[in-house]
Image (cartoon, rainbow, N blue to C red; front, side):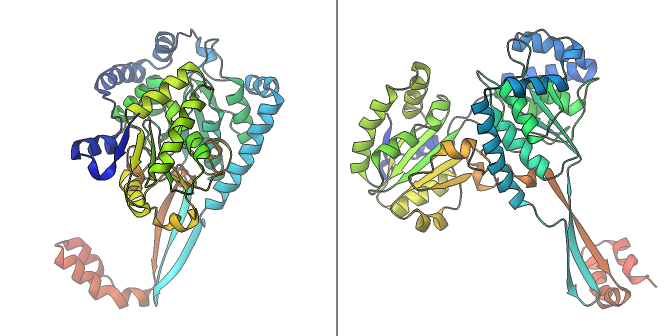
Length: 430
C-alpha cells in the first residue's frame, strides 16, 4: 500500500499521483476509425456484424430496437424490491435536477432603450450511452435520463449493449419506464457512438451523445468529436477522503475502499494530517477486505498500490490545498466541522459532508448526479446536469432612442477593429 508524506514527495512521484491512470487508446482509436467508417457506409448491417464480433451476440435487424412490450416485461419481471428502490432513487434525482432548471427567458435594461436577455431551449435530440460491462447499471440511466426529461428534450434515445441473450437487462428497462424513455437500442461500444453520429436505417442520428463507456466507446468519441457533441470527458473512477484526527477510522476505511473497487486504473486516496488516524485505518481496511469477493479485493489492493493510497500532510489546510490541486471526481469531507471546510474546496466533481454520506449514496439515490468529471477536469467541468441538455440564446433589442444613444460608440469600436461594414451599418442608418 502506498503511504506518502506530501512534503517528501519527489516532483516525479507527485506528478504521477496527480496524473492518475492515463490509458493509451491509440490502438482503440485506429479500430474506432475503421468501425465508424463501416457504419457510416453500411449502417445496420455493420452494426450487427460488430455486435456479433465484439459482444458475442447475434441479432437480426428487427431486434436492434427494443420493443414496447420488452420494456413492459422487463419492468414487470424485475424484483419488486429492486423496482421500488429504483423508483425511490428516481424521485430524489428528479427533485434535485428540477431544482436546477433556469428561467426559460429573462430580460434586463442595460440603458434607456437598450434591452438584453437570454432564452433557454432544450437540445433537439440526445443519445444517452448506458454501459453494461459485467453487470447492469440502471443508476446511469437515471442519472442521464432524468435531467434530459427535466430539460424537456424532445427526442431522447438510449443505446446500451445487449446481454448474452441479446436482451437489455430488466433493471435498465424498468429504469427507462420509470423515467419515461421508450426509445432504446441494443448497441454499445464503438458501433453505438458511430450509429448516433451518423445514423443508420434503424438508429437515428443525434446531435449529442453523453454517458460513461469503456476504452472503445471513449476512443470512438474522440474520433467522432467533429460529427457529434460527445459531452463530459470521463475516465477511470477516482476519490479522495479528506479526514482529520476526529474522523471515525471505521467509517474512513469503509469509504476509502468504495471507488478503489472499480479497478486497478482507479485512484482512491486518503488525505489527512493525522498519522494516528492512518495507523488505525489500515488494519481496518485489511479486515474489511476479507468480506468482499476475491475480484474486488484484488482491485482494491491493486488500486492502493498504484494510483491510490495515503497522502499525509502537515495540516488540514495543506490537505485542502492538495484536494484543490488534485480536483477529484468524488470527495468526502470527514472532519470535525465539514461545513467549515466546504467553502475551501474549489475543485471537486462532488463534495459529500460528514460521516453518514458515503459516496455510495450519491452514486445511486441521494439525488445529485453521479456522472462526474475525472482526470482533473473538475477544475473546468461540472457533473452532468440539466445544463448538459439545454442551450442558451442571447437576446438583444434597441429602440430608435437607444440606437441613437450608442450609434457613435458602436461606430468607434468598428473603426478601431477595422470592420468597415460594421461601421456602415450604424453610421449610414437613417
